[in-house]
Image 1 (cartoon, helix red, strand yellow):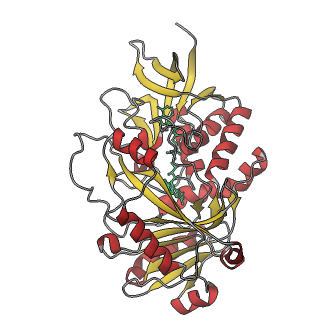
Image 2 (tube, rainbow, N blue to C red):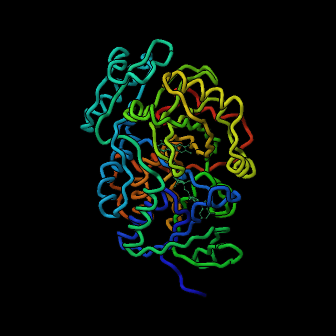
Image 3 (tube, rainbow, N blue to C red):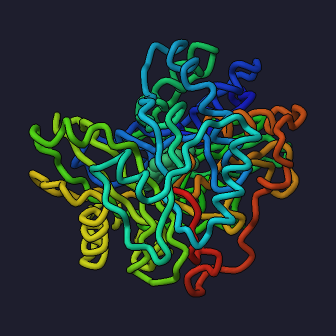
Length: 431
Ligand SMILES: Cc1cc2nc3c(=O)[nH]c(=O)nc-3n(C[C@H](O)[C@H](O)[C@H](O)COP(=O)(O)OP(=O)(O)OC[C@H]3O[C@@H](n4cnc5c(N)ncnc54)[C@H](O)[C@@H]3O)c2cc1C
């Protein structure tokens, strides 16, 4: 048999790249396997999809609950170090605004209290104060009114492509090897060694490893990267975004708008106003776009099969319902915006019934660990999620203030054919 590798990381996206860095720094010799981002217009592949193929992901320390608040804060505290060590900038500290319905003020009180414990500075803004502080923003017609939590420091957005690039370069500097290929099968030999089949273009090969870490994002259940018969409780959804091109004349007025996330607790179907807004960001085509995305309104549809997922990713075509809702929300939130053009960008998010990422062994086997389940907002906490996954894989003591069981991977017992999962009711939490 060929050499048996110490660790193989499957997936070189946000969680896999972070985990690979932390593993390598703790002395493990890791091989990271994952395809590169496909060229624009290249045929879609079930292996090459990544939820980080974009220029901006909202980042802040304030969390909907202490779990996400902690993973996000621990990561964000290290962003400047990652930039300095890798020489790759990715963090734009332009603040972050969360708009919450006043009807859930008890929830807002809890967030504010948690922020006080964490030392996160916030301004709690009434509607008049919001109008005065951010005149470019409209006040959303959420029943009972809204209030805002404005985090001015250590919040903004990150460039996920550049963060992944930074993490992979640091992993390689610490001794990891990166193989730009796809894993097509994972199985365990009789002697307990993992056998990993790899496809690189037309070439197939096999490597062997003592331990594996699976971080294949939304496609984890579909790409044979889990042992045969194992399926995680993980639901994939179409995530539609509209990008509104900002004219040169409006750029100055709008570029100071912070990223915005809203929480509308009313179960109004498509009319629910939960959303996220990314301020003007320059894309590879040289143009500046404001990007808007939904909460978990019903038009964010579940993608049940791998064909549905590949098709959604390849077609890049929104439904009429998605376009209508996102356009309405943009008009309400940034009423002055006169876009030069509007284009669509479709991505996939995956949700876990626990609402938290899965970080842990599968089936009690210490040789296999998963790091998956960003729940639509895993980018900002990815460095901490990767760090915890690396510790679990290496058998090191759990050192987070969040109990380890919070992240225990849940298996899907039966073939999922039911209706929309019940845990996806408003309020959806913070994107
Ligand atoms: C439209 C959109 C907006 C978002 N906005 C935010 C935001 O504002 N803030 C935030 O924090 N998060 C946001 N997110 C979520 C965030 O991007 C994801 O949670 C994060 O990328 C998840 O990381 P991951 O490593 O689990 O998956 P990914 O980043 O998708 O990486 C998975 C990797 O696994 C690889 N892979 C798959 N199959 C195989 C295989 N068989 N072999 C080898 N490799 C394989 C893929 O190629 C991919 O590179 C958003 C996501 C979307 C789609």
